[in-house]
Image 1 (tube, rainbow, N blue to C red):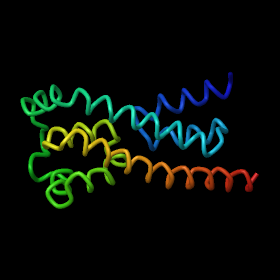
Image 2: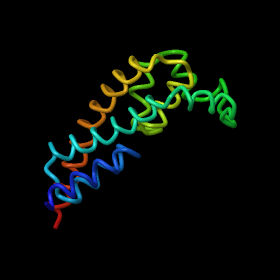
Image 3: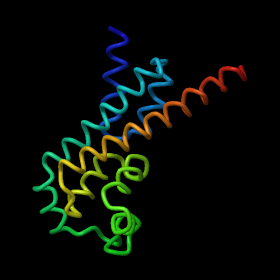
Length: 144
């Protein structure tokens, strides 16, 4: 039961922020593989929810228009240069998968294509961040 609670906790945190879920899972002493799965699953769920409700969100975002970002913002420049593939690599780490999905939808990305590429980006960052977190915590344990 304790393992299940840890898994659900990390998944829940992953829905909001991938980069926060992984070190928390490591601190909870969740096995690195389970930590990665729970974190990625949460992040994918977060992106999927945004993509699923994307059209409504897109209309709302277009009415609101982000202040200060416009066409000169970093995300817009990445979008212009790399499209969905560039967004998938940067958003899970910088903006979080849900906001990255919202940005992709607001910029007119195909929901299916966005989901596929966001999932790939989430998995790549999960592997990298889980390895860094696991090695970092192991290094701290060695210092004790």
